[in-house]
Each structure stands twice: as C-alpha cells, then as structure tokens.
Image (cartoon, rainbow, N blue to C red; front, side, top):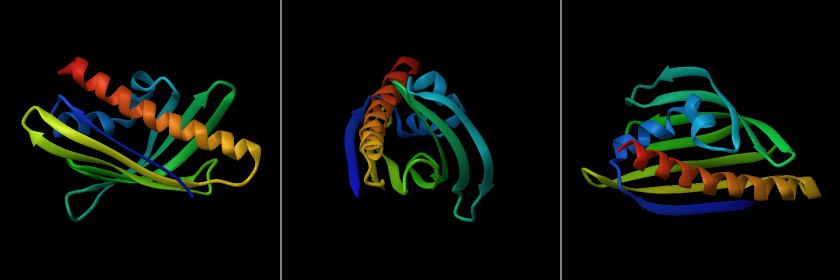
Length: 147
C-alpha cells in the first residue's frame, strides 16, 4: 500500500478552496496533468453532502490513464474519494479543509492506494503521487490568484 499525505496553509477561505476542489470539470484548466474531466452522476445525500461520480484523464509524459471515482462532497470541509475503476487496484482518500479564520484555511490531502507489482505499476505510483502534490500546488495558486 502506498500513502501520500500533505498539508498546507492557504490564504483563502475554506469555502472558496472547496468550490475549486469540487469544480471537477475545471480541472483541465487548473491542473496541467489533467487532460479531461467530466461528471458522470450527482446525487444529494440526506446529511447535506453530495455523491459525485466523475472521470479524470491524467497524463504525465507518455503515461496517460483514466480514473473513475465516487466522491462524497461535504460542503466547505471535506471531499472523500473512492476509486471505482482505473489503473490502480485501490485508491481511497480525502481532501480535508479546516477554516483558520475568514480568509485562511488548512488543506490536508491524505490518500492510500495500491497497485500491482510490475515496473509500470511502480511508475504509476510515482505518477499519482506527483499528480496529488501538483494538485495541491495548483489549487492553492488558482485560489490565491482568484481571491
């Protein structure tokens, strides 16, 4: 099992950063490794959260992979991600936002994923860890430019 965890203080509100993270269809404009993104389905849940199934196509160099995930979006605080299909055996994680004050929040990205044992799978692990790291950097830069 591979694990990726990263936290950062961001100079925007948790609500603003949540809006960026959950705007899945904008990912190709925000994150350079994301070449396509689409919402497959949306369904409100009883606790004011929303279940979203989405498809992402990620590319790094010659490696290009599509992932479909089922996500639970809890307004302004949490996005849970569960892989439904793709190049990995499993992927589960979350983007957690904690409001510091009206203009600042902490973001924590915490993901666990497993792959096969081939050399290509090991490359895919590095690819995914790089994608997650760049995602945080791109979300922060995008949010701070827009605030």
